[in-house]
Amino acid sequence: GGVTVDNSDAETHTTIYSISESPRDAQVIWAGTDDGNLQVTRDAGKTWTNVVSNVSGMPKASWVSWVEASRFDAATAYAAFDRHTFGDMAPHVFKTTDYGKTWTPVVAETSGVRGYAHVIKEDTVKPDLLFLGTEFGLWVSLDGGKQWAQYKGGNFPDVAVRDIVIHPRESDLVIATHGRGIWIVDDISPLRKLTAEMLTQDAVFIQGRATQQRLNASGGWAEGDAAYSGANPVDGAWITYYQAKRHIFGKMKIEVLDANGKVIDTVPANNRRGLTRVAWSMRLKGAQVPPAATAAFQAAFGPRVLPGTYTVRMTRGDQVYTTQLAIQLDPRATYTAEDRKLQMAAVERVKKVLKDMSFDVDQISGVRDELAQRASKLPASDPLRAQLTKLSGQADEIRRKIVATKEGGAVTGEERLREKTANLYGALQSYEGRPADYQEARIDSLAHELADVAASFNALAAKDLAEANTALAKKKMEPVKPITREEWEKANPE
Image (cartoon, rainbow, N blue to C red; front, side, top):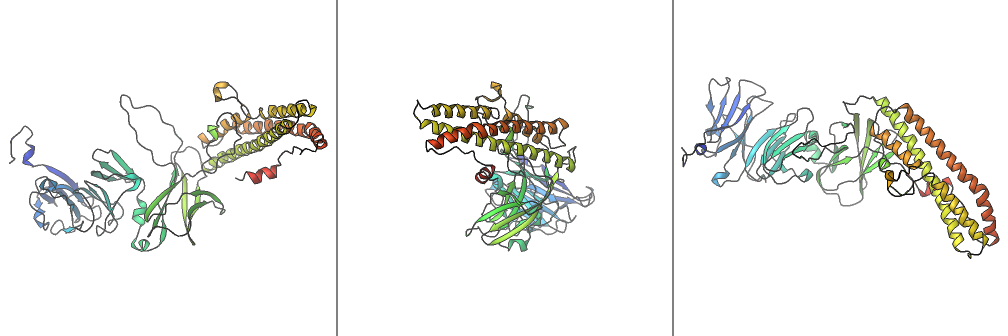
């Protein structure tokens, strides 16, 4: 009985707190109570046996906070006991392999695990991979409980972990905490592949699941009278590696190479010891966009790489390690890999238009500025000064056909070739399926318009600028020379 009587009768502690049916044998069911009973039935509940007395050293009336039947063996189960109400904050976790006749500790006193235990879970694939939730966080063991390490990824706090679920399809670890919401560890498959042999190596890549390029989507306001905020999974490919020691000497870098062995991206490397995971955006470099009065947000990022197999190369000092990274389409996608190739080809065509545009604008702006600079060195009464100033203005008028010059973006209604091309670039990236015919035609149209503007500037340079340079030479002043494409490419490498 309890100390006092109340409406709920809660103090009597006669509640079955945890139940677990064996996935291997439906006749085997385990039950744990909050007044220290640990029961098992092997005949679907017809008879029960209290096996708590077989747990060596466990005092009577210890709350059974969790009991978990193994998914690999019907005779195996795990039990966690909570004695914090007695002033005992230690994690008491045990394992049986003979239906409760004998029990062995899973968490040793010297394990370093802090906090009384709430939940113990066995991995769905690797029996020796265990997850333990205590009052002070999440703990992981790769060897069936011989050694434990606290999980601190993603700034996971030292918070009470009350339940754990391993997603059967995604291999994600879902963690329920007390007061800190639901946390999800994306893809625990590297933990399943981390072996004792790997732990002895200086560094090693660990393969995770293949990365699927999730469909582009945007959010909305569907909360109704409530609001919820949670971070989505990283929109990238995870690269997982293990280091026995912190890397100190020599440079450390991670590069991604395409099928031709070309380096297409570099990922910031973390040199700390242990298991590390970094995300690759799966994006190529963005387009070169000429400067203007407003930002071209639609062209602020590069296209996602095509599905396929890429090579990841990690350099640690003079040591080089490589692994393969598989990229796949989202299974929900209604387009094919061939459609993605056509989309990528269209994006690359627009990128080329934007690059050509960047060269044209830099060439025109350079001439405009140099003409103005030469004019400023001449007396106001000199006819050449007026000629140079006029020519500088004409060059700027040509530049204005390419880029917007009024601040305010779309509000001003001023859209030039740059803005139209950037909008097309963004539209092509927002949907990764086959581009529409009108989009393909629009690329050609914009390229022709840009070529017309470039031709008008070349005509200006061939006649009016040449005449101005002749006049400058007579005054022993340096001529104005438009930058060549070769010089520009060298100054603006991709």
